[in-house]
Image (tube, rainbow, N blue to C red):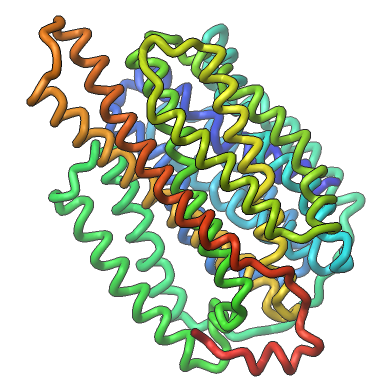
Length: 472
C-alpha cells in the first residue's frame, strides 16, 4: 500500500502541469517553446532512466530503491515549489521525473516477486487503479487549482503527501526482492541514454513543433537515436551481463503483448492530447471544462481496473484484449466524426467508453506478458515494456500532431465554404482532428487483429528453460 501511494503521487504529478503551463509562462516570463521543456524534459528523463532500472532492481534492495526514488521525487517537488525562475523549475521537474521513472518498475517487480501467478491479475488490477486514475484526475485537479490559486500549490500540495509516504516507508517497508552484484556495462549505458533519449527528444520536438519534421532539431536526434539503439541492441546480444536482457523477446506471448501495448499507447494520445485541443480551440471551452470532460473516464478506469484484474485471473488476457480493443476502435472512429455541433455530454460519454476499453486492456496484457518470463527476467521485462511505452507515446504524439497539422493546413489552402476566417479555422481544426483520429483507429485495428493471437501465459517450468529461449 505504501508503494502504491508513492506511485499514485508521482503519476498524478506527471499530468498536473499541462493545464498550468500558460500561468507559469506568464508568471516567470518564458515563451511556449521554453515552457514545453517542463513536460518534454520530464518525459526525456523517464525515457532515459527506465532502461537502467533492470540493473538497479538487481543491485539495490526494495527498501533502498523506494526510499531513494521518493527522496528524489520529494526533493524535486520542493525545488519546483520554491523556484524563482525557469532553470530551477526545470531542475525540480527533472528530479521528480528521476523518482517517478524508478517507482513503477520497482512496484511491478515487487508484485511479481510476492504474488503467485494465479493472483497477479488482481494485484496488478489494484495497481491499475492508481496508474489510470491519477492521470485522469490530474488535468481536472490542476484546472481547479490554477483557476483559483497559484500554480505553486500544485507542488506545495504534493509535498506533505510525499514526505508522509517517505516516513511510512521508512517505518514499514521491508526488503522482498533478491539482490546481486551485476556488472554495469558503461558503453551500453551510454548507447541506451543516447538511443532512447534521442528518439524521445526528436519525436517530442516534432510533436511540440507542430510536425516540423525537416528541422535539425527533429531529424538529428532521431537519426542519432536510431543508430545508437541499433548498436545498443547488438551489444546486448554479445556481452555476458547485458544492461537490458533482450532474451525476453524470445518469448512469443511477451512479444505479442508488448506490440499490442505499444500500438495502444500511440493511439491513446489521440484522445489524451488532441481532444483538449479540439475542446478549447474549436468549441471554446475553458481548461477546467476540458479537464472535467476527462474525469468520468478516469473514475471508470479506477473502478474497472480491479474487476478486469480478477477477470484476467479467471479467463486470461485474450478476450479482455479483443473486447477492449474493439471498444477503443469504435470510440476512436466516432471521435473522427465529431463536429463543433457535437454536444459536451456526447464527447464525455465517448471518452468514458474509450477509458473503459483501455482499462480492459493495459494491465491484463502487461501481466500476461510478464507471466511468461522466468523470475530472473522480470526486471528486464518490466524495463523493456516501460521503455517502449515511453518511446511509443513520444512517437504517437508526433505522428498524430503532424497528421492533424498537415490536414488542417490543406483544408485552409482549399476551403470548402465561404465562411469567415474564424469559422474556417474551426473547420480546419475539425478536419485535422478527423485525420488524426482515423490514423489512431487504423493503429488500433492492427492491434485488434494481433490480439487474436494472444495466448494465456504459463511461466517456464524452470529457469533453464528461460536460458534456452532464443532471441527473435
